[in-house]
Length: 509
Ligand code: BG6
Image 1 (cartoon, rainbow, N blue to C red):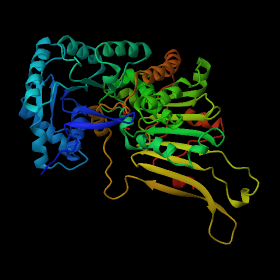
Image 2 (cartoon, helix red, strand yellow):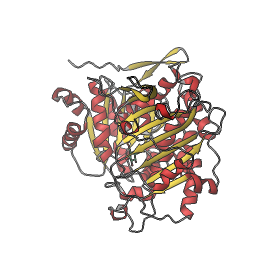
Image 3 (cartoon, rainbow, N blue to C red):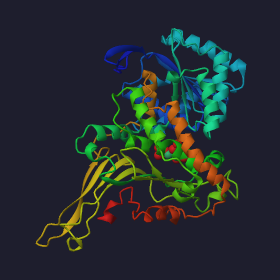
Image 4 (tube, protein in one colour):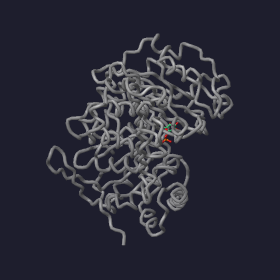
């Protein structure tokens, strides 16, 4: 029989003492009929239940604008879980989840709707012993964030006295620094920073959580993790898809706001940060923020020199995209972290749509040894590479030089490859599982603290401003290629090249 292990009261270590937290709660999903809810949130909730990581006293209320009965909604959720869940749907378990799901129809402007919701949640509190605890998940377009938070407040649904109320907010958090500051004020007027969970779903990915472990739990990485030994760092996140049905949103975002401001800068901070004093949320966030604060001050000249943008051929014909759109679907940057550890080491970042593979990787290229012993006749001495594979393969790859077997004194680069999700029986949790689980436990380590958002926007705004004032020559790359040639030149100028990602290492060997 199904037994739940995340019980009513969940203990967590904080500063050495055991803090007992109440995890019983109702999760209210605004945008309950949307794509995110169906593809990600519901499958995540089902998988959490399967893994015995949902509280016993728990239910879900989805809010949407379409007319539906609970039953109709539950049937739709059933189909989505069947389609998108990483764990095969088990009918018995589904019955348990089904009985915890409710649907409420109202427009996000409608005061009566909020009043009804409040009454309904109070009723559910009685039935599920959820003690007034709530997670409000805003899986809606960003223009509704402020409105919903305001209405929740006006209708007395955020009190935080005996119970707790938390808000989970999807990206984009603003579209520049000013709008992010404004939004943040609106949200934190109602929810405290502690109860505000800003989502960057990359932080929920297994290998992002692993970066700190790899760096700080292994003696052979940390001593060489600096400008004395590292030549450059390459952080790539490539996608094969185009903008699909998100042209309306993407037109206003572009790769810079959609990927660089959040996911890519998060990857950079985890790669570059100093070891935190401990593993508490604030200590980790403090170190990440220091990296963002150390990013090289950008001038317009530097932006023109070190930032490359691209747009794939055909983008202008996508649905809800302007025929003369200047929105970038590709961005590559050369970034410097101006602190003692990293002075002089370029971090190259690139991301784009319609590239050859779906892959996210961090490649650390180490400095060459002096060419005193082994020269050309031994074969080309390849640099040592450490590759942190974020997705789709999860793992770590190390390239180093060894003697080629045989009588000739030749060197060849060899690799040690650890693939975490290739192991039999290993089915890594999806990012959203971890994020919902943490929000239930009240742990915001894998969410972005306000100052992280603030400093990322400060950096990205400088680039956006220059790009706004310079007309690009778009489109400038073909679908299925690695973006515009200027992205290659960014590295060639420094005598580096982008290392292949997504399993193409062999071509370098
Ligand atoms: C989202 C972006 O945040 O991340 C999308 O809005 C992008 O444009 C997606 O496709 C990529 O996420 P993942 O997990 O598929 O790498």
